[in-house]
Image: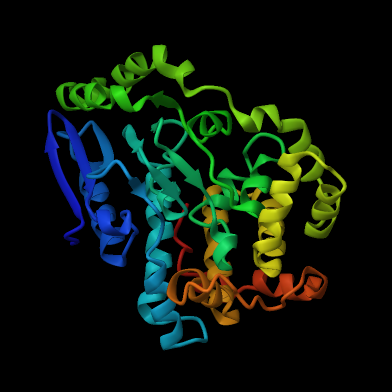
Length: 361
């Protein structure tokens, strides 16, 4: 178990508290295992009617995976990472699958930073998931910024976002707030910061079997407080530019648009890994026709290929370890990314019968 994951049951609800504030609740392997153990234990427990996951800090629900660990483990055995690294992604993606298909209301308070792996533990399934954003929510899938790709089911939930918004989020890694999260259909309810104490009291006092309905009733009159969605305002522009067949075509389209929003998107993409933007675009196109289990298996394969290549190791070095903000992407330019390089990431790393996520249904 993990010292950073606290669990208890009260009033018919299983409570999970993430308590690693100095690291913005970045997920370690022990934390993934603690979350999985609690959810598996409560799944068939008749005394638990709902689950609530929240943070001990208003700064973040979860900022993602522990990327310092990725860097250390990846360098220990560069051809794909250490056994612990392999275990981390296999078990994290299995946890994402467990959460998506959880049979009881799974309520995530997405207060503060919710990025990468944080999205994976917040995106409950369409039947039971309850996703609450606040005035402090900062949501993103920023993996291309460190030479990775939007994983933890991102190939599924981004590819099913309205229009071309998923491609926009995945290729730019941009951070959005509560109003945009609601418009993206990646959140269900909005609660302003001033109402969070009242929400906490409601959650603690309401029996688990009534919790989902109680939260919906509490938050309904507050929804308009989230404000207007910039993504909704820019939807036509995003759909037009991000409909390009290739990353190059998307960026060329953005270059031809003087609108500040378009130029900001272009500026962000110019800083990202050219190779991983191309892999991300292809992943989202494939993910649109796959179910969640298939998406997670595809992403698990992509992770193995990424660490073999080393792009994420360089991205983490530049942005987190050395902090020179000068990643040496391989290849360095979009023009040098060939279709064969992209296709290599999708070549099976295991036969189907040996895939580490073969049992996901």
